[in-house]
Image 1 (tube, rainbow, N blue to C red):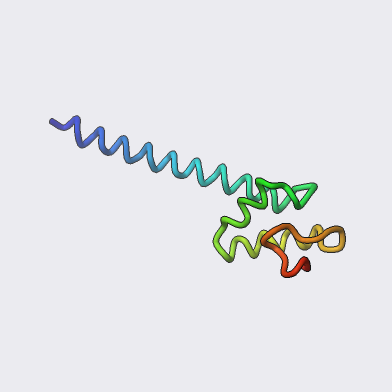
Image 2 (image 1 turned 45 degrees about the vertical axis):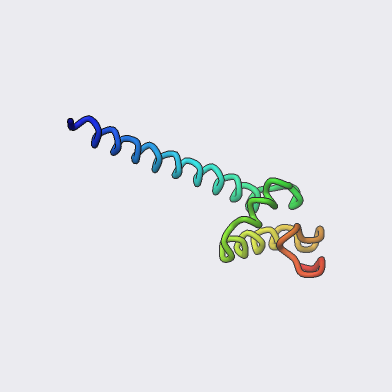
Length: 84
């Protein structure tokens, strides 16, 4: 009879581990975009940045601006009327 609670506990741990892995993959890809991208117009990076919560998105835009402000227009979600 103890098998059912143990199985539920194992399933819960697996779900938590899967959620953490997903967050790490998405967060890592987002960080790679804002910190190391050669081109600020990477579609996946822009998509991830626009889905981030406000403070994280603003930090990402600030990092992109520091690297690309004088080189190009801002990517979608980081500028106002085409200006940084």
